Length: 385
Image 1 (cartoon, helix red, strand yellow):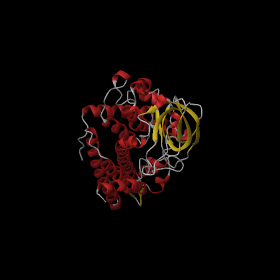
Image 2 (cartoon, helix red, strand yellow):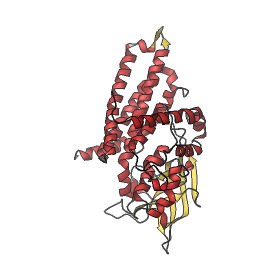
Image 3 (cartoon, rainbow, N blue to C red):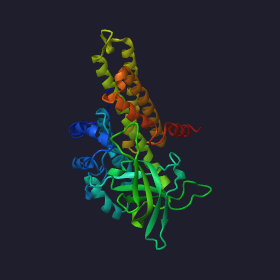
Image 4 (cartoon, one colour):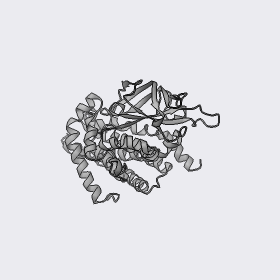
């Protein structure tokens, strides 16, 4: 079906990104997977083409207000090439908005120029060993010093994407105890340089997919964080995190739909070339029916995602809308990619084929950004259930 969310400017941008990925990423991607993360200079190169500072005002070196559609195109083109740009999407699309919305003028002058140039990359540390979706259970503490000049940060985080390639980490920490009436109160956001004394990297976790994007354990031991690095107001982190979740979940849906579409293209190519019983696999009715079903599901997912992109562009994407998009797109992608792998037969299980990477990479989309079960809870609440 014809898509109508993009114009000629977007098409030109897509061509540039497609060329960049073909030249700077695809030839080196196996090495990145072996290393467990991309080289740091990837982000400098992304900065050189002007895509690390979407939304950063020109006075700080950025391009100014930029439509989310450009980030969606970057996600779609990464999916098309069956690669990931490290944690680029998280840094630019999910963490940067916190700074754009909450940072003081002094903080903007200190941080935004480096982000716009690609010299400063961002990550965020929410999840802890004992807290996943239940962020109200965070135990990492930030105690204000007696003279009120700094916080002392202690605790541990896990499943943190991209920390090894980041210069700044937005840490969610407890600055005061929760109340009996509200477990969510008392959480704050602190911007912590990753080279701070007491900031330690644990394991680079061995995931089944997303091999070229590092996922780390972190520990904080008596890190001194100046009060000037408090982002927003103390104690309001939970509300701030909720404000950014709809865009984050839309981005997950964009990625899932793009990867499902890529799986169909790779399956089509394979079944036309692969011969069994003297006939191309594509000649069998089952193959045609399976791909017809997959294509229809992806078209439905794309329509839902595109509607979400349009709503986001005018500031009308609700948490329930984003939950519906993420739930449908990620569950659809899981089914579609599984069917496309099946059409590859035994070769689909071999990592030399892109479908194998798609299969392992897509599984986490139903978990991060809020699991499918959390999405269903949000949707049910929107239905007044």
